[in-house]
Image (tube, rainbow, N blue to C red):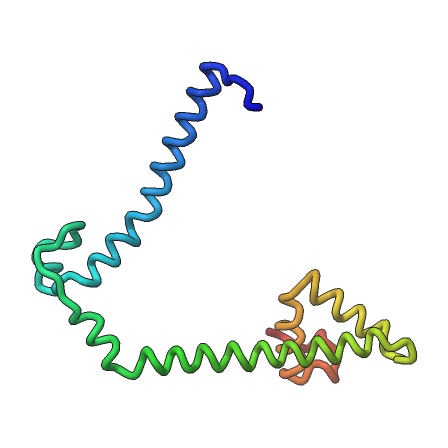
Length: 146
């Protein structure tokens, strides 16, 4: 059973809904203008700029994008990087999980320390890779500079 709201509560609810509606329109408007602009003729965009109701519609922008190989190459690279990265992360996580679950593993404590450090400080892996690639892993780190 709903309780009866006071006048102040109804006023606040009205202002809150109005604010959320205006904020939503403020966020959606640029995307709507971009989509409409993509269907607008290029000469009209140059002459009149972006409008919500263009005089002429055109698919020339989409034809130009779909005729070039850049879009498809970009998608191919994105899909390749995503699949290879996910499979690599899966393999490394599985190997690390197995070695941490195995009680006979002598390096269980250093692996756990390394995994915990990467969970709390993910940027540490990048610095470790730079440090080891520069050859500083075998020397005293004081001579290394990044």
